[in-house]
Image (cartoon, rainbow over all chains, first blue to last red; front, side, top):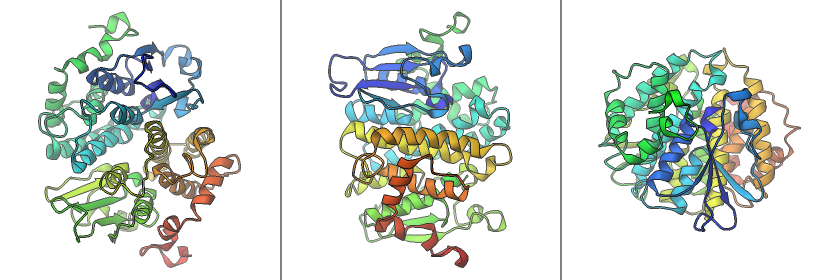
Length: 222
Length: 222
């Protein structure tokens, strides 16, 4: 499932404070991978990037090292701490708090987490290819995006929640990118469109963009 | 969608530290509601409970007060802070830290969040009734439950992560309850079964049980 397709390995003993870089298993177009790349860029954390092709040969994710995360199956190993989903971003926040991706105010933190969850568990699973044969995905996507627009009207400043970049923004931009791949007309979502545009002007969102990754196919590079 | 069916209203100015009780909108059988009831019980937080029948008349969730959360549409209001999903539990942890539902060690915290997300966004959405006409839910449930068993073999002590009750346990028990409703044979999942049994012996899990809520139908009471 695409929404699991980012895995961060960090040494379980030495922690990220050591010279050993964390390793991010990533796929250029996976929105989950992109979220984590943005977080690492914003926090200035150097990392090794290992590209996994999720499409080729039925998906390399079943065969690369210890990683087997087809339909969410990722074994935790004893020697390495393997993180995925939003837990990666929360972990980065716990261990490298600055710059903050969660506000200090508890209610604002809750808003950020609600929006992040709404996107990560509310919208995105509906888009993943495993469901496409059964689900009218454009319909469910429309419903969830409309809900997101309503929420953001209440919470947004320059970005999703107020005027600082938060975890919610890391979720929003890859989501809009996916929506555009699905040919969703974003005209009815002015708040989403405005925030997305503002975020795409930031360096961390540009350097982590799917069009600029080591595994981006030449025809999709920009 | 059932996994949104808990809403906690807290006054946005006075906060939960005042005498004004938070209000939990709940449905006796919703696993999301149950999770929050467990968290409130463990943290000893008094609250008002408003029952919403999600089935009757097509679902009262569309008509009760300001609450409209069919397919995830919950407007945030200016006067009230409306929380849902795992964000409620994270909010409770931020504002009432003891007893802890997240460990202090960042890697253990990450494990708890991964397991919680796995259940809340990986397994549960597949069970909700909106998908039933299209999805072979028993199959997806089986795949995700097998993955959960593998993860818990690595992380569990008495409970999901080590020997203290965490947010992951609040997710597990309602999930197993749902699985039993779906007639899933839990014999192949000894770790899940063992942890679930241990948790159900705790008072907070018993008092919050779907069979003991104000809106539990008489025939389902125990």
